[in-house]
Each structure stands twice: as structure tokens, then as C-alpha cells.
Image 1: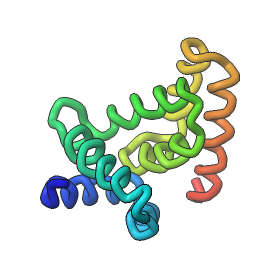
Image 2: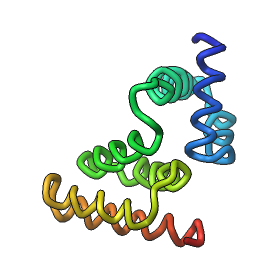
Image 3: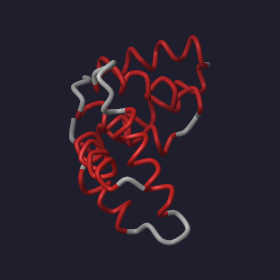
Image 4: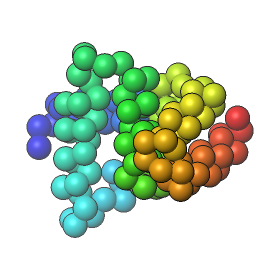
Length: 125
């Protein structure tokens, strides 16, 4: 693990997903899953999220779409919060999920709407 890249990724990860969630994930890592936390933080959150080619808002749009397609509600929940933190509105997220209904299937989109409603309620929006 490259400590400098890990720290850069940790900063981005906190800004997008929230410090409390990220700090808890890192602190609760054990010998089994710590390598995954390090990999995700260094490569996903630094090497990819910090690339200059796309802004964070656009990356959030892509993630919400892909996570809907993959039916990953736990990750989707995190990235709905991240999308709000990256400047997307509820209406933006609504449009993304309507688009995914056509290309990924109605059941997947319905689950994403359901997950997003939980997040909006938790966030008070």
C-alpha cells in the first residue's frame, strides 16, 4: 500500500461518503477485510475518483446507474448520499433511476427508488 495515495483516497472518500461512515469502515477493518479497505481507498477513491477526466457529480451519476444495474442496494445507499454531497438533487436522482428503468429493468429501478427514499428520509431531505 502506498500511504500517500491511501491518504488522498481517504480524504476523497470522506468528502463523498461522509467521515463518520468512512472512519467506521476503516476502524472496524480486521486482518481479513483490511486489505480490501486499503485497495478500495487507494485505487477506487484516489486513482479513479481523483482523476481529472470527470467531475464528482458525473462520477456519482455513473455510479448510481451502475449500482442499479448490478442490484447492489447497500452500495447504492452509500452512493445516493455521496451523490447529494456531490451536488445532485432529488430530481436528478429521480431522472437517473427513470433512465435505468428502461435500460436496466423496472424492478431494479423500483428498488433504487426505494433505497433512495430511505436515504432522503435519513438525511432529512
